[in-house]
Picture 1 (cartoon, helix red, strand yellow):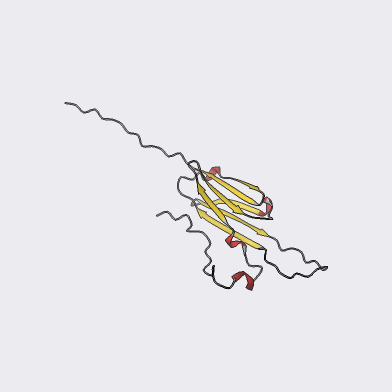
Picture 2 (tube, rainbow, N blue to C red):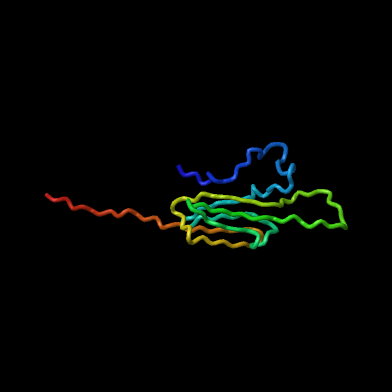
Amino acid sequence: MFDPFSLDIWDPFKGFPFSTTLADPERSAFSSTSCDWKETPDAHIFKADLPGLKKEEVKVEVEEGRVLQISGERSKEQEDKNGKWHQIERSRGKFLRRFRLPENAKMDEVKASMENGVLTVTVPKEEVKKPKVKAIEISG
């Protein structure tokens, strides 16, 4: 059975009353970067929310085995000696999302674009070939 999320990162502590990222703020709070996956008749379309990141800070890669990988890093802001932080909630650090694509994905035609902090990755699909049906004349 096809499981598109078989390589997706799973956080066993998601939903618990404590945050695993608070213990180590340099750890990836982005590992759960929000991604949507929509399938249309022509393509698989992925959208990832990456606010504040430039396209140069994001990598989109395809790997053997029809795996789409989206990764990157939000750098830590430089310390400012003129102020004092009262609260830090915005995510920083590395993130990684992986998706195993179905067999009809054209891995050599993947396109990506980024606009207003939203990464869009489009993976075209192979045309579905309808089986040829040949009518057989019945003699007699």
